[in-house]
Length: 69
View 1 (cartoon, one colour):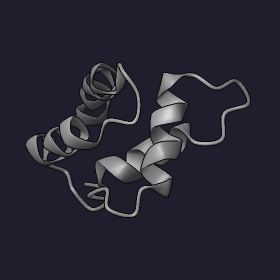
View 2 (cartoon, helix red, strand yellow):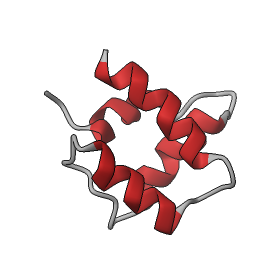
View 3 (spheres, helix red, strand yellow):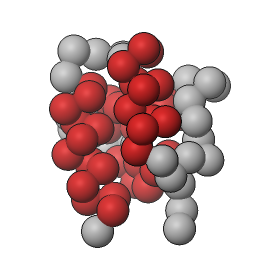
View 4 (cartoon, helix red, strand yellow):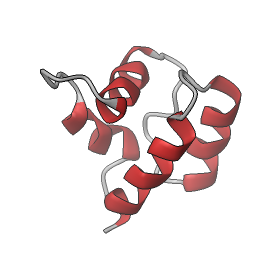
């Protein structure tokens, strides 16, 4: 299974910026993000401490559901 980070890279570079692409771009530039992780708790905890914008955790939860299907 590919990591959540690799899944998120499909949202990078959208012509119209939305919260999904903002989160993907932030993950790309954050060198400490757990890029190889497939673990919800590890990524969620990281975002709780390093959230790049107000609703980033909500966006993460929505995308996690898509990632797992």
